[in-house]
Length: 346
Image (cartoon, rainbow, N blue to C red; front, side, top):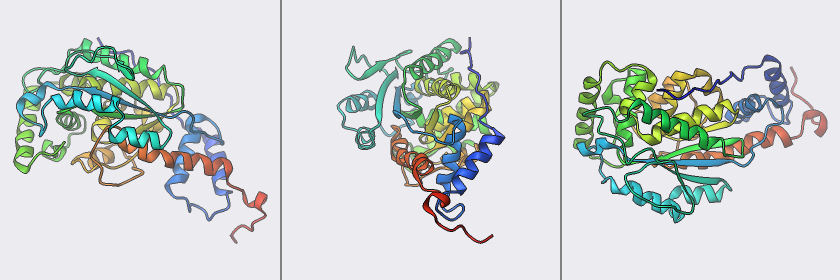
């Protein structure tokens, strides 16, 4: 069983593209002088099919899940930190709470598959598929049905959002191991270049993690279909993000992509529906080893480079003001005609 993949149309539109170029170039500034903000304004205009795009009711969704591969000692932190950090999110104590609040952004915290019983909790969306995945060093992390269920629940969650911008974040001890395995399988980049420190491994710890992942990919060498790769190495939160991303793009929302783990979910989604990349704004380049190469594989230009490697959607919240700036200059800045400013000599 696989999730029904929604159709995602390309945003390419020659006449609208020309209209957006004209609108951007006619603002009271030298041509191209707002750099990446101009490209971002044009991208959002194409997504929203207008020369007057908006950022309306932006939301960041943090998906939390646990990973069986932590049994292989691939993380500097115990698995219990996943549920403890979810509690921190619910208590408004994490970085993402601070940054989302600062930027007037709705924050949704989702239990995708944490190895903990939270019970009914204010502010926690219960979409739990299971109590963590199985250990992919030994067996597939998820069955095809579990993976499809996670993707479907992600899609259903996006359908409840009111705004036109959604940022993706995650929490899950062990999930950089899952993301590194996904990156290797989907891009062909050697495992050694995909594996980093995660939440703080030593050099020796990184070597051990690399060895575990190399053995795991050898064990599951026959797996090649993107959704089978996701089920074999992914996590409930990664699968849920992939499903949510596909649904968000099919609804012509702007997708704000965070760091290494979120981008690994996008790698899967982009293998299934390549036109999803038209809808993605890449918030930053993470300091987690492998993220820069992952972005290069997607031909992505990150908006920020701040040395972040926190996750939680923190990069999305920090990049959100740039989306506001992009749509605002296009909507509100004077034109040469309206301001009676002389244009440059040709």
